[in-house]
Structure formats: C-alpha cells, structure tokens
Image (cartoon, rainbow, N blue to C red; front, top):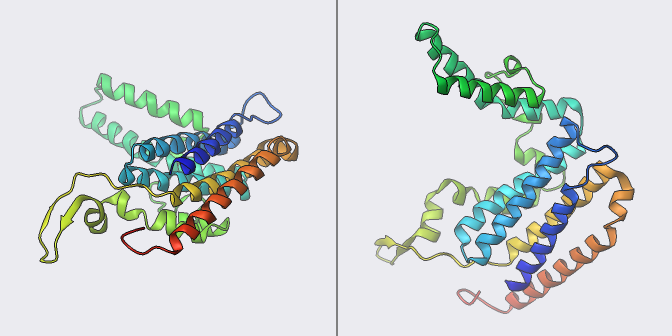
Length: 269
C-alpha cells in the first residue's frame, strides 16, 4: 500500500503538470477550459483519494475513485470528439440547475408583486455571471431535454474511448458506495451473524492497492492525451519517457501483487 500510494502520488504530480500547460496562447479558450478544468479537477480528486487512502478509509476513498474515473472519461471523451458543439452541450447541461433556480426565483418575485429580496438579487447575479462566463444564454438551456450531454451517458462515453471494462469495475460497482445501497451497508457499516442479527460497525475498511494501480494507469492515459491535445506532440515529448517509465513501474508492481495474491484464499487476502 505504501508503494502504491507513492506511485499514485507521482501520477498526481504529472496530472498537475499537464493541467498547467496552456498551449500556444497565454490562456485557454472556453472550449479548451472545459477539458483543462477537468484536468485540474482530476488532480484535486486524486489528491483527496490519496488523503483518504493513507488514512485507511476505504469507504470514502472508494467514492472519490469513482469521481476520478468519471473525470478521466470526460477528459478523454471531450478530446476524442472535440468540437464547439460538444463543449456547448457539456456547458449547457451543467447550467440546468441554474436555469431551474433562476426560474423559481423569478416566479417568487412575480408572486410578491415585483419585490426582489436581497438574497434573491445576489443569487440572480451569481447565476447571470455563471451563464456569462460559460458563453451561454440561460434561455437556451432546455429543461425538457433529458438527454445527457454529448448524447451519451457515461457508460457509452467510456465505451467510446475504450474504457468499457474499467467502467464496470471502477464506476458501475462503486454505485453501491456512492448511493449507500444495502450492499454498501452490509459490506462496511454493519456487523452480522449467521442468525441474521445486525449491529453497527464504526471501523473503517482497509484500502487495497488495486484501485490505486488502476487509477494510476487511467490518469496517465488522460495526461498523455491532454498534452497532445493542448500542446501537440512537442508537449508530449517533454514527458514521454517519464510517463512511460512510471506506467511500467505501476504495471510491474501490479503484476507482482497479483502473483502474491494468487497463492492465497479468503480471508488471508
């Protein structure tokens, strides 16, 4: 676990470096920022995931691993099909809550005969600022449109960038932990006996290294694709050797760990 944590910390440092690459201009455009902002988000999520892992809190680290995977898929999908139309879909979809909140506030103001409360004005200003920075007219956000951004749900986006198998392991299975299903309660938050009696369990689960290896590989793929996307092959060449070496080290440790586990059975593993 110590080695896995150190390797993922190294991966996170490269995610942060990549997220600082602006390309040929001194700043990103809005469309580039949709991808670059996700790289910054990934750096923070991996840092938070590591924090919970080293504190030996499997329950919360698992939730963060799912968020990190979703961000990796978003980065790779935005890059693979990059276009103003796709980014606009991404941006408009994210403003649905603001549109609903805006409409609710305006309805309350009308019912009050036009009086605007100070808190409402502050909220409206915040919503208008968010829409302006997004480059989107709030009226163009269609609340009746139930389709996911880009016309694909996350499973379909993952499949489109070759991550359908990791989706099942890293995202689909972690739904239990994010939403607090019975399986999550049984696995982490309850003690039980063969008679079907349950008592609370306040002990934290012990993290395993496999999620760290998986996120390390997936994050490195996002780093490589983002560097090429924002800076071309010249930018990727600056880190090509280092990223390849790090990926090989993760693979080596992962295989060694699997060999170690192959001779063990539950509950020794």
